[in-house]
Amino acid sequence: MVIETRALNTMEFPVHIPFVDQLGFELLKFENGEAEIGLTLRDELCNSWSVAHGGVTMTLLDVAMAHAARSSSIKPGGQPGGTGVVTIEMKTSFMRPGLGRIVARGRLLHATASLAFCEGTVVDANGELLASASGTFKYLQGLPAGGRKILRSNASD
Image (cartoon, rainbow, N blue to C red; front, top):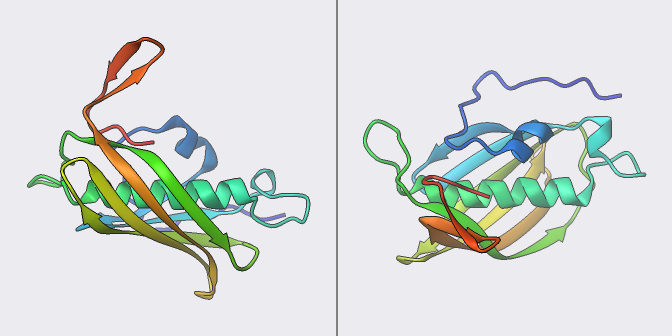
């Protein structure tokens, strides 16, 4: 059984994402086109091999890259700009199983007025590469859903 430990240098997520809260993600860095998110694995986040479930690893990468995309629009005083992001596509490669404490690093490679192109990696406590990803994200002011438009500035998936 893994005992959950929180990093001492965590930040508040700029957007409340209930799923991220449920998983226990910790925001470690959010600035200048980069984001870092940590997670101490718990039994319920593992697969039948007792290692990080691939869906958890992919979600960690997705959230890190989305935050990297949004971090470039931070206003003076540390507040994010009014643009949210949604994932358009993502490709992930798994190299090693995740155990214990894992950290995802997202980096904005290029942004246009409507799209962000990002890359991400997940490493373990020893710095060993566990997974890598690339993703494309769309900047949005609102999200059309169920025949209505949800306006939520600073939203992130």
